[in-house]
Image 1: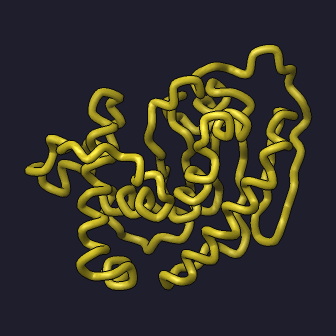
Image 2 (image 1 turned 30 degrees about the horizontal axis):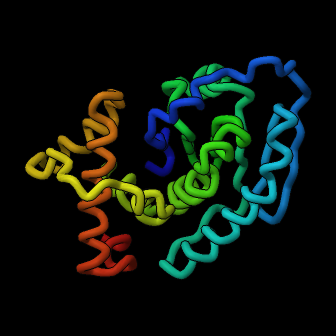
Amino acid sequence: MKGASEVRRWALLALLLASAGQSAAAPAEVRRGGLSVVYTDARDRAELSTVFLAWNGAVRDLRARGLSVPAAVSLRAAGSAADFAARTGEPAGIAASTRGNVIYTQRLSALGAHGLLPFTIRHEAFHTAQPAGLARWLAEGLARTFSGEALSDPPAPTGLEGVPDASLSARLLARDPVLLNAAYREATRRARLLVHRRGWRSVLGG
């Protein structure tokens, strides 16, 4: 949730591959509007246009839902999966982690190669803007709904339909790779139902 470690799901497969053959480089920073992007892997430069395009779209769409991102947000891309884990203390297979107005991500080029970069940016943008106090399951379910990544979820039951909300939040926080996928899908299913019934502004306002 906002103000704490916000963790994106997915085992992410090849994102676990380290940045083999890439020597450490001095960080480069690019700022456009309220977003600054810091990266060390030269391959990430080619993804900057995608990052800023997705960010600007997310800011616009969040405003339409009554939310605003912080005036200044920093996105810090890791040089490898191991670097990401060292920076955040999160599992190396997580795509991104947001803490307040700082977004930590895997290599931008790795996310881009797997078609995850725009979804990741939108997901984390939501976390920077979400209201304080949202339950973990609701925050993640809304972030996945907002980002568009939930559209690829299979229609099959999650198996967690009867799990209480608090227990679902606990499963998300535990980050057990065996259970995480179903937990995210179930959180998203519940969040989407709420949005369908009540609308974004009502759900976000409690």
